[in-house]
Length: 111
View 1: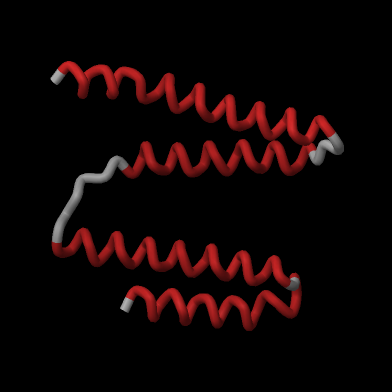
View 2: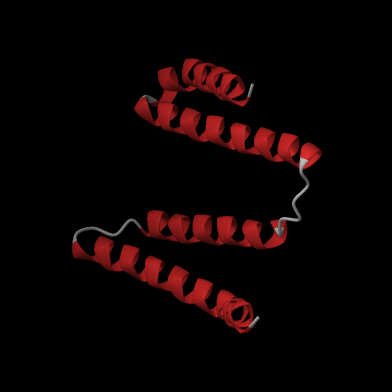
């Protein structure tokens, strides 16, 4: 069922997006299919086997990563600065994850 929904979303989005934005439309269609399958899996899974996911924390990481990407994308550096900018974004992400998760890791190791 989940794969069928993903296939339908992929076909529909490709039909609408590819004529307008070319192969980028196919990439967006794939993302749309994965997001729809994720949402359906989460919904159906939680009905049968509820798991207390920390959605606030997951949302933070998703939007933080998207924000870093958008900053990097809109600065539109050329040449070597493009690599410096991308590396800085990865380092910022890694440091943020480390600072947010280090206490949780320490606590889990100490029992």
